[in-house]
Length: 442
Ligand code: GLU
Image (tube, rainbow, N blue to C red; front, side):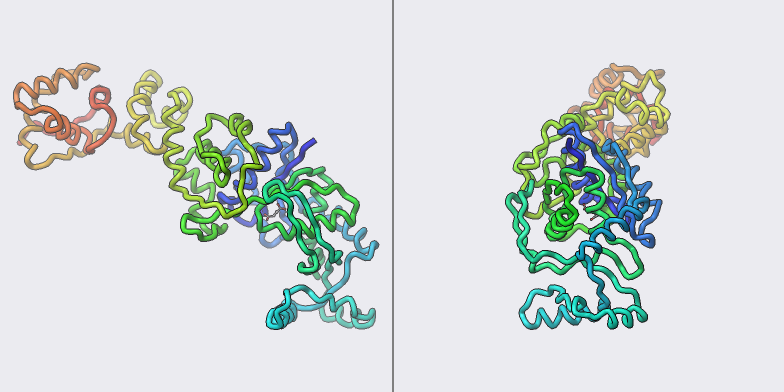
């Protein structure tokens, strides 16, 4: 049974880099008919906020990435304490007292001497008496004693991976104030929740080595791991959580479509071309983790615009009837309205501008040299309701009277009626134009 998890910390809004992790784990779970767990890594009581939990859920729901199970680390502190106790009993945890300043100095010294900045385990030499007196100053924190061997695993993306643990500092699992840190909480959850496949960013490769050792020390089942490359901006710069424009909520606000985003991310950075998919099921079927490469992957939000457009153009009015009705389009006009405008929108947000044009009319755009022509033409508009033939018969009539034809005829009329130089077929649009703002006076 496959179980995967997406484990965001609720300390900010999800961004596109988080989505990559969420999506891969979701797709693997669905491909294997397994379980997808949403795990909220909220062990940090200061930085974790309920509003971010809501925002994470909302983003995933918007994308259709529904989870089968949700877990909060803050509900599992008792389990973590028990696991820590077990490790302590096994002699795998040791107490340390160096301040971050002292550790910094040590690291600098090591680097100056050309050595890797690995914690030197000097706390191990402290006597009970020394520890007791240090504890008066401040509580000790607890590190896991790594076995200084190599750790190898068959990574789902990186292939055979080997980390020399001697080059890694013993990880701190419990802070001086008793707060359990991510490494311990995460392995505890992965083991208890039967997580069998962990896909996460390549910034976690070293964590994986240490986590494998801790899981082994606890005789737990080591999941399979895969580390995807990190997304970088179009100029190669790192994408950080702080880059608000890449927050999923902002993409939603900008009118980008979930299917565009999901189709793009399910292939970006793989050897397969990005193409627009019709549904999550299609994405699930076509997803192949082994096709992804290890080098940083460029993400450009601009790539989502054409995919969004293509997706929208493939929809029928009934697919987005809620959006159309919300504008005030009467049900009997919804289909015609959609067919007229759908090739002329980038996102659904553009719909309202077209409906406004139809209902309220536009400020005419008339070049000086066309003014007389336009006024003449407008005076020839037939009275009463316009229909599907009005544009054709009217423009034929205008040609007869003014002698204008082709672009010289059509463009000034389009600009005068819509205020724009581009847009839907005028023959289709004209019957919808309720308010033509050109006065029949020079
Ligand atoms: N909360 C961690 C993060 O967001 C989870 C990492 C993991 O997948 O284990 O980086």
